[in-house]
Length: 111
Image (cartoon, rainbow, N blue to C red; front, side):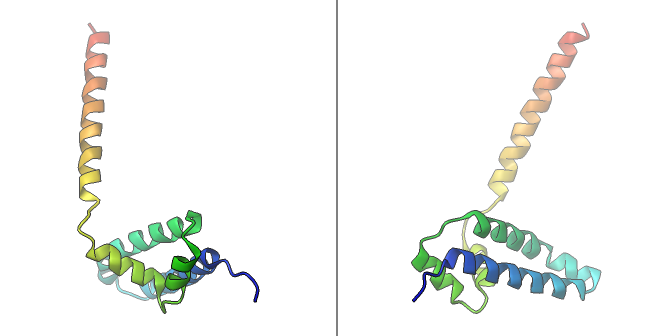
C-alpha cells in the first residue's frame, strides 16, 4: 500500500467542498448570500489553514473520511465558546491607542 498524505487529501477535498459552497451561493438571492457571509469567510479561512497546516496523519485521515470535512470543522467552530470578538476589541483598542499617539505627536510638531 502506498503512502497517502491525508493532509493534502483533506485540503483538496475541502477546496472542492468550498468551491461547491461558492457555486451554491452564486445561485442565491442577495439576502440569502448575506445570511451566509459569515460562513463563507470562516470556511475560506479554514481552507487556507488546511493548506498550510500539518495535522497528524491519523487525525487528518479522520477528517478526510467525513463526507463534508469543511462543514464538519465549521460546525465545530460554531460550537466553540471562543469568539473573534475579543480579538476585534483588542484591535479597536490598539488602533485607538495608535491614533491617539499619532494625534499627540502631530500636535507637538505643529507647535
